[in-house]
Amino acid sequence: MRLGQRFYVIEAVQGIILTSRHFFRNMGKHLAHAFGRKDARGAVTIQYPEERRPYSPRLRSLHRLVRREDGSPRCVACMMCETVCPAHCIYIVATEHPNPEIEKMPERFDIDLGKCVFCGYCVEACPEDAIRMDTGILEFAAFSRRSMIYHKDALLALEPAGKDGRPTSPIPMPANRVS
Amino acid sequence: MTATLVDLGIIFGRVAFALLFMLNASAILGWVERKQSAIMQDRIGANRASIYGFRVIGLFHPIADALKLLTKEDFMPARADRLLFKLAPFLSVFFGLVAFAAVPFGDVLLVGDREIPLQAVTLNVGILYLFAMLSLGVYGVMMAGWSSANNFALLGGQRAAALMISSEIAIGASIMGVVMVYGSLNMQDIVRAQGNPLFPAWLGGWVPAWGILTQPLAFILFLTAGIAATKRVPFDTPEGESEIIGYFVEYSGMKSGMFMMSDFLETVVIAGVTVSLFLGGWQIPYLARDGFHFPWGATLPMHQWLVAALQVTTFLVKVSVMIFFMMLIRWTLPRFRYDQAMRLGWLGLFPLSILNIVLTGLALLLLGGSRS
Image 1 (tube, rainbow over the protein chains, first blue to last red):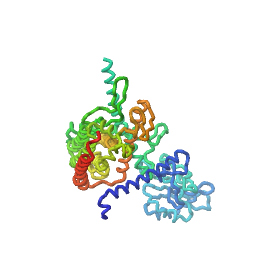
Image 2: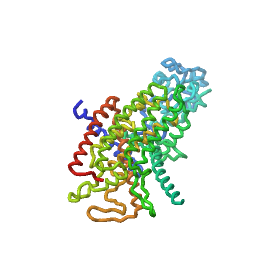
Image 3: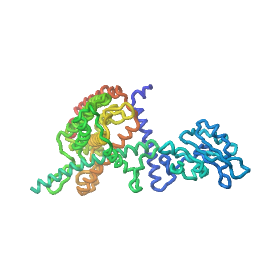
Image 4: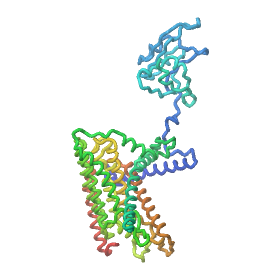
């Protein structure tokens, strides 16, 4: 330690000057904000549920199943995503599509978000671009493991996030998830 | 008969003012601490507690905290000493509360033929009383450490005792310099003497003889030792909330809250004493009992009620500024290690305060007499 640091007092005073400079600068900005200058921000805090940090367009958030024009899933139940999934969290049961030109469609498409590791391999593997992770929804906590499982209908109902990354569709409530 | 009743009422009012000031200050200090630290660290701080959507910059948080603490389980370890375990937090808070009684918050108020001193209790030995109450406060802490039947609590209590002894010697010795300069143990007299001019008239009598000017070294020593006596952060070895756990490990609910509260009470007491001894207490420069008397000859007569109100406000403002400063220190400096705190107390503060007494004595001998 330098001699000045050994005496502690000088360092302590410097620290107090630093913290009080922060205090008075931020306090001035808070006061300016309170008296109408809405661009003055005394803190770097983002008040989360009301304010959101802008998300990157590459953010991997809650999955959604892309719909065809008639509303049926674009998914053809090829099982690619189920195969590639390192967490084994996707479960698909295939069925016949009413349209004879389309071979199959999923009867069940379950994603267990309690297991999902959000690697995005399912999105990469999909040959039909039928599954995407662009909803911007990050808040899907639940009180039971069972209600962490998302079914086809809930996944089909989701919409992509807006330009700033804000979710445009509501978070599916656990009541809608359990079949 | 009525006269005694009126006197009783006046005494009751004085005590109630000091008591309510302390209780409210300790409740609000929790909020002040959270908000001030947040603003210092570029954060916003607690602002979520709301009543019908009104948040009032987080001022409901002390109420929410108290409600939470009161409704929590009040746990006591099976092998704890029942009486001491329950007594300890009350003792801590009690000595914190009563210590403020000796601090004057205003000059004398003349109502009819009565002289009402604006001080909870007029004590000729105010400083000794205060010193005693500050020292007794550690008994609650030591009792908590002992009675919890927990080794870590016991170690925390022992650290608290060691820190208290090393700091209270410096407190006592640094106060002695002030007592020598103003020639009184009565805090009201000391505050009153600080209104006199510092220099004789031929040097220009416009600087008031505040303690920080007559005893600058004692001010720094007292403030350092006083912060150590509050057991708050640079000297929080007894508590070590973040990791080493201290004397209140086994306490829960409001009893734990009372230990936190006693820390805040001690902060207010130390701030009040520092203001009274070194920053002129309720004094506003040039304000006498009948109005302003400026050194250049001008006068501004005022009613004594206005003067008293100004004095009490000044005292409260000074105490708030002092508390702000102590909070600033608490949120700036990291904790002293146990041996560093001991070394600072015994090899730093204590010899320096003795040196201060010697220097003060020499100065008084050469310059002639105390300023009472």
